[in-house]
Amino acid sequence: MSATHTHSASTLSAALTDSWTMTRRELAHWARQPVQVGVGLVFPVMMLLMFGYLIGGGRGIDGDFTDYLVPGMLTMTMVFGLDATMVAVTQDLGKGVIDRFRSMPMNSAAVLVGRSVADMLSSVLGLAVMIAAGYAIGWRWHDGPAAFLAGVALLLLLRFAMLWIGIYLAMVAGKPELVQTVQLLIWPLSFLSNAIASPESMPSWLGAVIEWNPMSATATAVRGLFGNPVAAGDSWAADHAELLAVAWPVALIAVFFPLAVRRFRDLSR
Image (cartoon, rainbow, N blue to C red; front, side, top):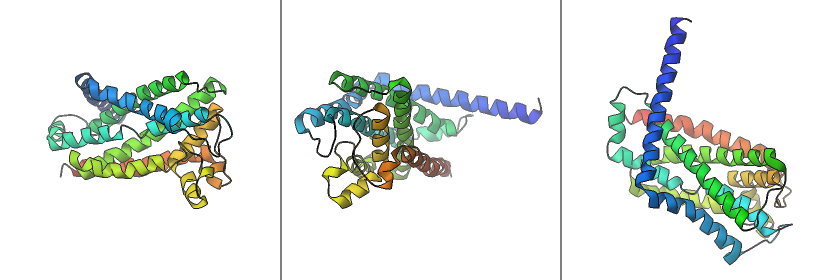
C-alpha cells in the first residue's frame, strides 16, 4: 500500500473516531435531560391523538382516515424536534464550546457529524414510538416488510435533509433566542402539506401548492408503500410522489450540507 493510501486511511479512521466521540457527547446529553427527551417523544403522539380523535377529518380521502393520518403524522415527526438540534448548535456556539473543539487535534467536521448522527438516532427512536402509537390506535401497513422499510427509509431521508437545513440556519441565527424566529419558517412547511388533510378538500390553488411541498411528496410516497389511502390528485407532483420523495431531500442536502460546512469553517476566521 502506498504512503498516500496509508495517510488517507489514517485520516479517515481519525475522522470516524472523532465523529463517534462527538456523537457520544451528544448522546450523553440525553441522560442529563430526560424530561426534554420525553417531551420530544410524547409531543408527536399527542398531535396524532389530537388530529385523530379531537379534530378528525377525512374529506377527499377514499378509505379509513386513521390509515391516511398516521403516515402523514410520521412525516411531520421528521420535522418536529428540529428546534432542539438548532438550540443545541447555537448554545455550543454561544458558550465557546465549538471554539474549544477547534483548538483540539481533531477533525473539524466531526462536530457537525456527531450532532447529525445523534439527531438521526433520536429520530429513529421517535419514529419507533410513533409507529407503535399508530399501531395502538388501529393503523396498519399492508404491503409487506420490504415496502415498510422503504417507507421508513424515505422518512429518515427527509429528516436528514431537514437536519442540515436546521444546522445551517442555527449557525446563521447564532443565538438560541433567534431560533424561535427561524421556527416560524418550519411550521408552515409542516401544515401546508397533505400530512393531515387531502388537497382535494382545499381550494384548487392551495392544493396545487401543497402537492409540491417536499413533505407532501414523502407522505404520499409512504402511504403508497404502506398500502394506506393516498390523497387524490391529478398533478405531475401527485403522480410522481415517490420520485419527488427522493429528489426533494437529495436536492436539499446538496444545497444545505455544503452551506453548513462552509458556514462552520467561516466561524473560525
